[in-house]
Length: 222
Image (cartoon, rainbow, N blue to C red; front, side):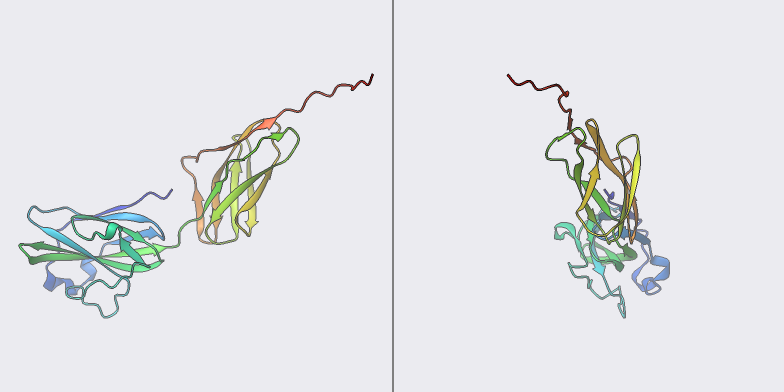
C-alpha cells in the first residue's frame, strides 16, 4: 500500500578529505517503518559500489568506520549491499545514515553519506470477505483487521453512503452492517495515533450477499 521509494544520488561525490564536513554531503529522506525502498547512484563505467548503514553516528568517522546497523533496525534486501542500486528495508523508527563508496581497480574513488528518517508506519484496515450470505433483514458481521496504534477511526462506504466509526480500541473489529440487498463495502480511510492513511485508489470491495426471504403466504392444514 505504501509505494516503495527510489532515492537516486548523483555520484558527483565529495572527495574523502572533504567529507569530514558532513553537512554539504547530506541527502535527507523519509520512509515509514516496515517500508522497503531503493537507494541508488548514477553509475560510472568502471566503478564498483559498496553500501553501508549506520544506526548510531555518535563519534563515527564515515570515511573509515564500517556500518553499525543491525538487521533488527534496517537491512539490505537479500543481504546485497553492492552495485549502483540497493534495496533497504527500514524496520525501526529513528534516524539512520547510509554511505556509498565508489571503487575502481580496488582503490577508493570517493563516497557519499545520506540521512534517512524512519517514522512510524501509517495504519491499515482490511475487511475480511464475508463467509456466508445473510437473509434480508438480518445484520451482517464484517471483520476488520487493523494495524497501527489504538485508538483507531475508520471510514467505510457502500458506494452511496460513507460512515465513520471512531474510538476503536481492539483489532479485529466487528463491523455490523444491515444491507437489504447484496452490497459491496470497502474502507476509504483509517486513522490511528500516528496519522491517517487514505486508500487512493480505492481498495477492492468485499461483497455481502443478501438472500431475499420468501413471500409470506397462508399455510393450510388438511
